[in-house]
Length: 407
Ligand SMILES: Cc1ncc(COP(=O)(O)O)c(C=O)c1O
Picture (cartoon, protein in one colour):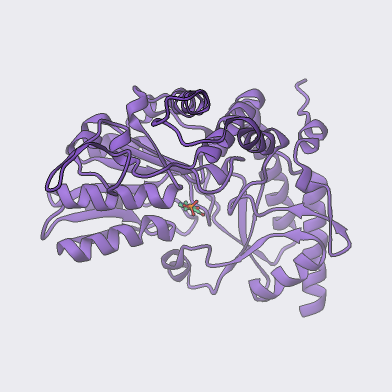
């Protein structure tokens, strides 16, 4: 039988070994940001110890070495998500910037008065507001795919919403509130039968499920490094070359140009056309180490272990009787949103924190979804591969305490 090396893994994450409020830290806020293994921390400090300098432009040794590492990581990301070319890999600040880039540049080129952009009601604000604001500017409309009570997308409604006015579909691969894994392949192939491009927000799926651009066949895909054990401030936009070639640059400045004269500029080739200014080189070094870490562990192994954590926590919470789980889709990533009886999620979060356990409470940047459920907020426990069943037992004890206090 395969044994998951949990103790060795936990040793790689220094932050986990501390006391919080006189209790050993239990970190269940991984959907907001994951912790970083020592390998990632060392990659960042190593960059500053030996390689630090600006990339692409220098003829000197350090600039060559840092540029090689930076561009090598672009190729590594290409292989990690199985994209056809490294020209399709754009370094951004994260999922939010990636979506803003597409909304702005695709919007300018392809969206005009009367057009529609189709998203779902379970989207993070990052995959709502850029479309909403772009559509206001272009006099277009955002339409929302509804969900079923269990948190699965209503695919019949989705098909009915697609029409000749639909110019782009943007949906999340996995919900940050419900955990629902959406049938994105089905959405993409249906959209493509009408020649409609699709953006997939992979912020909540990449560290749990991995991703394969060739298999998915989506037109745009994005994710953030900090939700996959890499540093903050680095992320990826994947785009099919035909779209990235066609749409205008997002930001103007150095690096994204070929020539500049007083009145005219010619833009650089892909991928540099979308990378104006000095990039986050340390972030790219950290992302490289994070991808290596995930590949060493294996995405299948991670998925199996995290599913065990999810099932264990779901069974324990269900057995408590008066816990309402929000999001009971058949396919889920390893997170649970719930309402602890009639205790307000915020009050519950404060008591749970007193026991050294980090959970998130609130609307999770998905206000339209919270409104759809007509609830004030949820408590969300989101698990990573360094979490354990024993930690879930501690969460259950904390919830019992919450109920005793607010009884
Ligand atoms: C589904 C989803 N999309 C997008 C984002 C935005 O990610 P970032 O803030 O890293 O840009 C998040 C963050 O929680 C998310 O959960």
